[in-house]
Length: 96
Image (cartoon, rainbow, N blue to C red):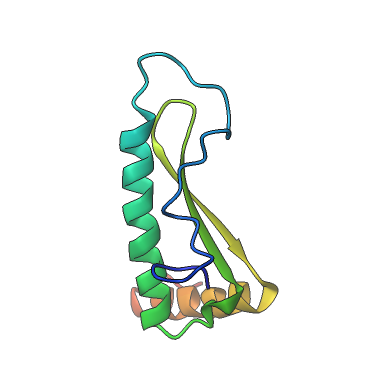
């Protein structure tokens, strides 16, 4: 996984060429918020045992300045996370 402390972690770099900038919009606040969320999500995935070699997380900011987390998964990582989500849903009584 690309995560905190790994060489491939993209959450620490702003995507300055990701789109058009609008004067007066605080993109850095949104990006910082997304960077924190990337760290939290990466930690949580590792804690539940997801094979994070197939996971890539990247922080950015949307056009209005809100933080955005981009998640890219291998097929096997997506399946692992789907199983965990189903188990969590069942535990919360939300499984169908």
